[in-house]
Length: 286
Image (cartoon, rainbow, N blue to C red; front, side, top):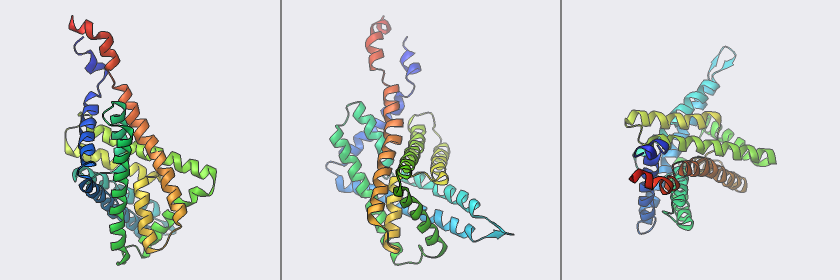
């Protein structure tokens, strides 16, 4: 019986690792809030760089032809693949990304390690930091030609598609579902990393790249990536601010469902052995 809890609740190490990470985030958002904002800002900067790399690659291949056929789909594939390392850089620089923190906060709330109001503070500060980092690079892009030409055209087209979801109820539903699936993939990668079964760095890197590739290639909706993209395009080409804000709000809600509930709450409950131990604790002691 002694090994039963480990066999029945194999995700206990995952929960333990997440709760340790939560403790650091909770402490930083208290007395070290400005440093936490800086760590979150770095995540926004990383997203801003890799997102433009994605559009640059798509733009280059969109202009290439083999006979009458465009190579744009190859560009989409390679662009999504090159966007994948963004999560790797965020993870290994110990930066703070809102979407993965949704999972962490929900697990912490389930196990009563953080109040929901304090959890909301962690998420809000993280989002503000992510936005600030994206804003810094948007300002840098403003005084360069990096978001012009084919790269700018592809980014503008992407913005049009993202804002177009707000034109109908079915479009909003589509956006919401894409946001759910997006953060499900992101936090599925973090689950693989935190659960203790993957020790090699290259396996972790592969998991993160594939997760981001899936969301980028399928056109899933990431609230932070959208915020950064809208900021970059807004400062360089102009943007409909109310529509952009509407997109981000819907994406935030969908991301919370996908990462906070479908991964965070789901695995918090599945690995909660408290009732099992209360019922069988006496048998184990015997």
